[in-house]
Length: 403
Image (tube, rainbow, N blue to C red):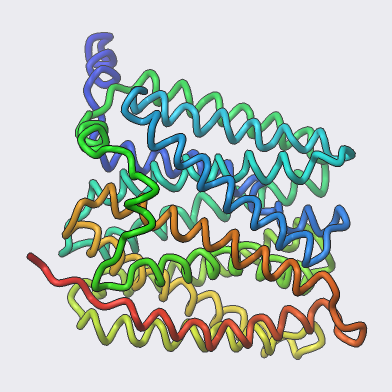
């Protein structure tokens, strides 16, 4: 029988950084999977076209930048627990905007709050992750992380799709609020190490002059701008394409994602321990080549394809994308470990989100008056074909050199 003192000792002992990282990521993967994953198709079902969704993404990017500027100045005044708690409250606020869906302010409000949520979630997650790795194990750690996230995220996606289809948004809303409140209480109750907070407090806020004048030999600014565009192309446009392949069903979309996750988890379990020992340049070159091929394959996908060919393409696309993300994030975090990692993470977020806003604002204008003879699926295919060539620019990002 466990004694009361033992229970108190368990809950009063400081939690390690890996524990905090996985707990934080687990809670938010669950929350994102329940509904935020479905935002692109939800907007589409609400009548938004490609121009409207592109404008929405642009607003999210600019909101992220504004939120990051504020976050960068609040982080030295607030406890790390307060910053984590804020991420959960902002998620609740993002979900709550759905009740304004009949208002003209719905899309701008959702975009602004979603940008703030993305800022708090991604910055905290990256800061925690980079604090748990070394240059020798970043690939393995990120592989473990992808498998862990895949399990929770995909279960949440399926659950969210099922609830949306069978019971509607209200049930999903209260379930999400429950997990958000649980997350807040969990991190306030659990003592945690303060090494992350100390590192953040030692780095001053980034000034506009520093952001404007930043240059490095790794061409990071170009790569970060490029990566923001591709991340949202993956998480918005490609999700809409997958939605078209199902009978426009949230549940079936969730089920498709679950099947893909199972296949990928098996593959990543095999390769995650090898990537740190392999020639990092050869791995990266292969990953970029496969990523380019994946975007070209997206352009080929059609609903009227033979099922065997269609799902073979989707599995290849998903694997190529995930393998590239593993190789690219290893390279990014290796660079981060060899400099001021916290500052480098902030730089990536500023540049990726600012140029995300610029690029998708331009796309919104392009999509505003599409040729009458082109269907939405054809426009998406041409976008994917063009993106395949654009992905070649990832080769400009060199490998890190240990100091």
